[in-house]
Length: 363
Ligand SMILES: [Mg+2]
Image 1 (cartoon, rainbow, N blue to C red):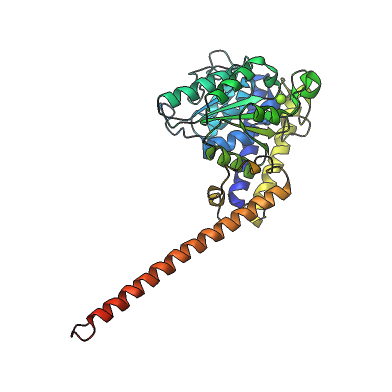
Image 2 (tube, rainbow, N blue to C red):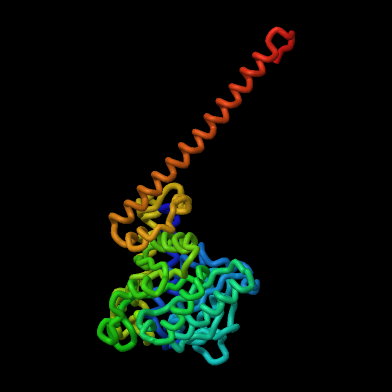
């Protein structure tokens, strides 16, 4: 991913946050915290990952928002992708609107399951993934879960199921913001070593910063290269991300901003957008590569050593160095092949010259 692409994604994420807050403000109710924490993940998914150009194709990828209360984020992304009108966002939670406070199957394209009763979406996603395998479909299934949701016993039954059937077409995304409706997850019902739990249950488990597009890209590359297991991407996130007074504040789990709060939020997000645009114009280095995402595609990311290395800066540098080394190796291999072909051509020419020498023929 190039610097320009990263900055554009970050701008898009801010714009989506504005759409989400506008919808919630108009509705006078809803869930801002958990919606804002998954914006980068959904932005990346719908821009690069999910194959859903035809939302009615039986072979489309599926995304099940198991933490259904965060659906304003999904509605906003669907609107920005052109799958629903942006004006429809203003009808959020209104009577007769297809955009209800929790996803309703079939309400609009892209909503693949009715969710909101926590713990159930992942089970449906597992069924979709197994069904696709039985029907020899190449589609992938993504399920977004909250961390508080992992306290539901049904989630772990589904995890056992996914592992038992080696659902390598299933990617779980856990929004690890450490907050739920009643407080910090660690205080309500501690999930201790969540990533180890997924590993112990047979998942490829990758821990990333869920607001970092490079790490999201790396995680999905790892998912694609994992052939024998389901994948869990544990995204460390900040609930209420992007709005100062909402960040890591439990009271913003399930209430809409009032007019003053809404105006302040939009002001903050507008400033973030201006800063990002200026960085883009100035050509600021934000950790992208000139060659974009190609480098990651050439790496062997099936190796588990990458799973927990993505988070720190050392690991990111090492990832970039490894990608550069892989690129150089590829170039050298191509040069070697070219040299061998040229050498073989010269040999053939010399042999031909020798065979035809003195026979009055010219070549
Ligand atoms: Mg949470």
